[in-house]
Amino acid sequence: MIRKFISRVLGRKTPPSHGKPVTIAVAQHGLQRDDISRGCRRTVETLQEHGYQAFVVGGAVRDLLAGIRPKDFDVATNATPEQVRQCFRRSRIIGRRFQIVHVAMGAETIEVTTFRGHHREHDGNKAHTDAQGRVLRDNVFGSQAEDAARRDFTVNALYYDPTSEIIVDYHHGVADLRQKTLRMIGDARMRYREDPVRMLRAVRLAAKLGLAIDPEARKPIREMAELIDNVPPSRLFDEMLKLLTSGHAVRCVTQLREEGLHHGLLPLLDVILEQPLGERFVMLALEATDMRVREDKPISPGFLFATLLWHELLAKWELLKGRGDPAIPALFVAMDDVLDVQAEKLAITRRIGGDIKDIWAMQPRFEQRSGKRPYGVLQQPRFRAAYDFLLLRAESGEVDRDVAGWWTDFLHANDEQRAAMLLPQAPGETKKRRRRRRAPTNDGPHAATGH
Ligand code: ATP
Ligand code: MG
Image (cartoon, rainbow, N blue to C red; front, side, top):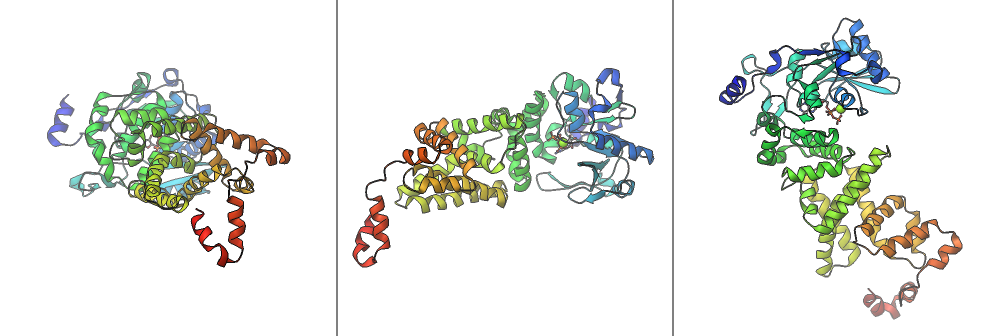
């Protein structure tokens, strides 16, 4: 109560980090040291042998307690990056916003981070912020308590020592996890202002872990949603990709919408979810993605973003065709338009942008089911992705199911069956082609009217 009052008055959080942490023994938390990857255990042990403190931290501890297999293991230590590097032959310091050390252990890479501290005005370490209060740089080492306080949610501030099998818990994260609550450490508004991406993280982690976002953390999201505008596009892209490939994309997107987070700030979701056919298509795509993630199958970001933007592309394409532009060039213009608009908010990488275009550009070619053309389509390097995309379009009701069915049959047929499946050439189609190859003097007028 008092802390909250003080924080309101001062407009900043008094760090709860000065409180004593709770240490939780294995009998109470149940996490076994064997749950930790070998590489991670060895990293922690080596640091401890050199006299440093070292813990497994963050998402891995949280996920294991929640019964989920962690994606990766992170280590936090009081050793500086340089000291960490000296403990491991195969390690290197990675720059970025904050120096971390990558330690190679067999096939694993363990990320080792030095405890981070607060920025205080009086010691000249104030964090650099932009006009909206977003923290631009924060690279001060600190104590474990300070490190815990600057993490986002209580369930993310747990430190597990595989040697003693004790969990150090500064913010009642273990209890929150048991009570299925995602609670922000400190004042939620201030933490969102420092880093608006935390709003997206709240939605993603709640969906992934089946937690309810604590009202104190949930309420401000709606009001502060527009701060997302301020986040660099590349970071937003990373976070959206994490969200969409979390295996809980449907739940995440539904929740983003409930929190008002999709509106105005992610044009991507904004546009599509507002049109019934678009929504159906996107939800089908996300369901399929969730299924693949849960089955440990690889998923392609290009495919995912191609589906998310498809209905926006269709709208642009129709507009251009309505103006009288020829279909295929219009498609290419529309593709560039849609991707350019996205780039302002979401830095889709060049490679993924290329994949998206390949998938889109193939779609009109599926309509051509006569002559040699279907064979050419089968040979395309991106055939599989484009074909899966076609199936989704058919399932959502956007294209005739017969077309998709035809391609499925064609794909599985032998040479003879394929030849029998080809549709008759459209009237004039063969003639036109032959004519064009002859001397232009006779055919000029016909060729011009042929399209
Ligand atoms: P996952 O790995 O499932 O995506 P995670 O919580 O592990 O989720 P990471 O990005 O790997 O996410 O971050 C590791 C830890 O770093 C988090 O558990 C959290 O303690 C801290 N962290 C990450 N992002 C932020 C942030 N924006 N603000 C504060 N702390 C953060
Ligand atoms: Mg993680």
